[in-house]
Image (cartoon, rainbow, N blue to C red):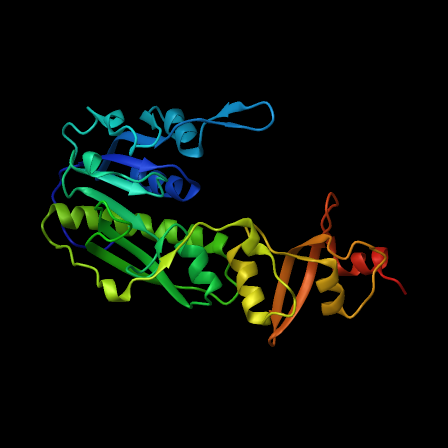
Length: 305
């Protein structure tokens, strides 16, 4: 954080978040001497697995463990009354990877004081997957934006932004961590400056807006005849989910081999790749219901010699 002097007043906030990215930010806010997290709002518990066991998300677990007041909600579009009574004497509502749309009925409970951390340099990469999109596009620079939320998707006025570089071999997982840490500091700094009247919102330029979407499993499939840089960028972008995969037919053609595997459409997960001098190298892979193995072990076990 910079050396700008602020008021000694602690800012009371309500925190909205539901993901691991949110958790990093929440921890930083709790460690700040200038921020008091009064309430945490997160997605309600969900049923998972064959037994439909109830599981709360990572934010709910952490916040309850720290003794924080936790409000679990379902869709606020369907029922905005779930948040009544939590904004008394609150300076800001901070929204970070929350997962639900906030309608006007909610935003009006604290007008122009819902502040969002978005992991892109807005208006570029509005939407659900800005970090993965930056990586899959081969960008070398991305960043965080702090904006005032409105009822449209990532279109609110910008209070502050900050760039960070993307390394050639950096994955989306690495970038999630880096952006969450740098974004936390930017967020705290922005809240304090805004409260002190030191920064004013700037409208986004809609002509420069680009959009991202929810990532589907199908986006992880590649044929190994694609551009190698594009394949490697997909590997870096989708390393957490859905991963990168191909089929035996494509793999055999890429490696110039014939295997003992009869089903040439069998899916193969590409677990670790490298790009060296524009040449793509498969280092580890995984067949269905099998452990991850090195390419050498794959040759030893499946190659027709």
